[in-house]
Image: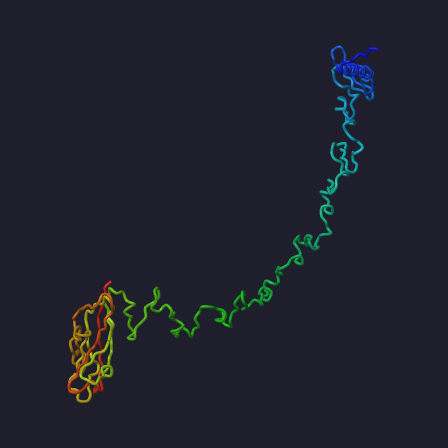
Length: 360
């Protein structure tokens, strides 16, 4: 017996053809194709439940085959467009009255037209004259005084106790009371001088400004303006008074400091005028001169202060000179006696006037 051999490819093709023929056009099988190689349509499934929608003459799906869609005629059908079950219902919509307005019954918190002239309807009388409410008017159409706080009654306008808050009188951050003489008491004032201060120099004078910049000039021991307080360009006189005791010395000549000439100082004139004659013991003569160390007659020659005093008895010396641009200089008076030492003098007083200026 001869056995035929089938090629592998032929076997696959034979099996495929057999399968396709068995399932062609069958449920759960494969679709058949028409002459145009397209799936053929089953006319029995068109427009039926579980089938496909058919098309009308305008190549559109008929409205009968669509659910939840309004027909074109429904666009002018109020009943179709309106869900009337929700009309005037809770969580629905308000219907309109015959006058095309929302009925008053559908509104809350709205006054009826008749309420516009109804005071009781417009006014919430429970809040009248009540806390957090509103004030009612009196018969005179005014707010009653009982409805006001912090307001004076008309009778209070002539009542001093009502007008004045006496707790603040003479109190901190309050107001000053008046004395029996209708004046503000001195105790209520600050920075004001008492009448007794008008003769009190310490109270009248602000001593911290004395001799200070932008303050006022002080006076020296001779009640004259101190040299430091004067414009240096202007010359001025200083007066120095010395007595016999200032020159007391166990010898016949001595000198003492009487004035400090400032740097750039210029001495213009010196006057020696004794007011009490110098005398005592066996002293026979007594003279005083003015100068500097090493030259005690530079600015005033020896003047006789032993002689009797008088209004025309003085020594005038015009011997101008200058000492030092960078330092002060001691101006000195020298006393000289004969007959006895200077410490034998028992009387004598002299005024020495020095006129000086300072270069700028």
